[in-house]
Image (cartoon, rainbow, N blue to C red; front, side):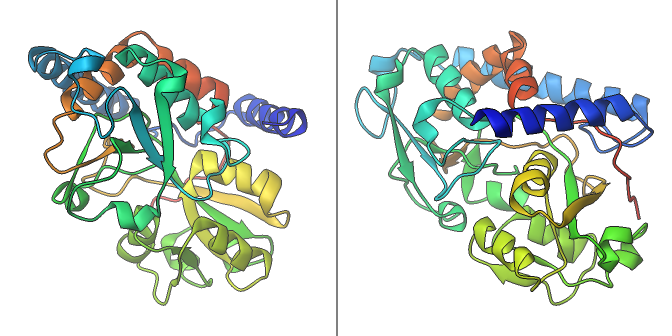
Amino acid sequence: MNTRLLALLTVLALLIVACGGETTDDEGTTDGTEEATDEEASDEANEDAGDEAAEAGDCEVDSLPLFADGTLTIATGEPVFPPWMIDDDPTNGEGFESAVAYALAEEMGFSADQVEWVRTEFDAAITPGDKDYDFNMQQYSITEERDEVVDFSVPYYESQKSVIALNGTPAAEATSFEELQAGTWGATVGTTDLDYMENVLELEDVAVFDTQADVVAAMVAGQIDATVAALPTALFLTAVEIEDATIAAVLPAEEGTEGEGMGLLFSEGSELKPCVDAALTSLDEAGTLDELAVEWLQGDGDIPLIES
């Protein structure tokens, strides 16, 4: 991340935290009791996964069922964006997902030069069949539908969805789902953001694009008013990529998806998954995932919450 961008995001994060407010937390709720319950359930699930992995057998590098012997092959998108990865370069260890990938590799016993990156389309990875990599990492939300054809790791991050809207459009001023429906919307094909717009916000005629870059270009050109994105992505896009836009609101988690988070994507039945789960669980328990999230992402803020 260049110095100017890092400074901008840091100031933005500090302003948001300083403003406080009733708005939101990482669980998309203002109910502290519910938050605690969700976190406890998530922690228990992670601990169970780690225990299962520890019992799964040998996780030494030489014994792992890898796509290429001695190498951890990780797939990601083309291109990739801050704050998840910086300068469209997953190899530099900068950005949350790149940093997590190298921390995970080290935890599993790989050196940095034993990590190989490949690029894939987001939607193409969510198809049945063997993969030409060990796992894919590009903000995949863990869903039951996807889990029918691929496997996911334990979550490495949980985020809220948010509304990015051009200033002066109906979406920028909306205070309810009904008012959000007055705008024109777009999203990347195959994403939970698109599902959320159609199933939760009940938006019709959402324009569908191949990549997030196409969605951003459509907003800059004024072809669409708004989109939905994870809050860290929204903070970056409104600060750097789309000058005349704001984060209009954060949104509640879709019913039944609370606590699912983002996971690494594997081919169905992957024998590597238990060892990756064990390593992720270890990083979580050591506080490493939280530390990297603080370094690269922003979670809380004084942004309005639209609940219905």
